[in-house]
Image 1 (tube, rainbow, N blue to C red):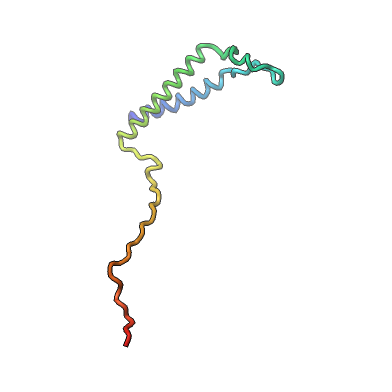
Image 2 (cartoon, helix red, strand yellow; image 1 turned 90 degrees about the vertical axis):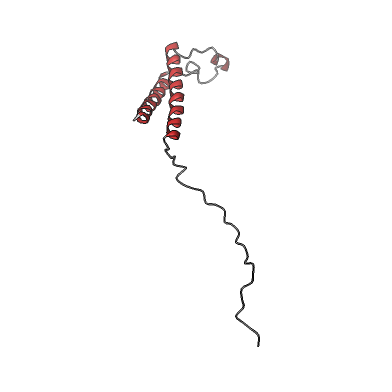
Length: 108
């Protein structure tokens, strides 16, 4: 139950973070297509401080829920997709028998 609640929070934080990042203007949004110098990239405003703080808070929540979900799945014994399949092991060399087999062709 608790795992599913954290998972729902994680998914909603992911969707919100995608939306907030897409709503922000890019650093080079004010630059011309041709003939503009790149030194103005450093001083270009990147949006309101509220959007930057919201992005940072959502990124922190994403990191926290990711770590918490991995800890919960490890403690509850959940298996991942990769643990269901095992890699084929290298074939071991068969040992030769210690005594040669008895021959059926006897010389007369």
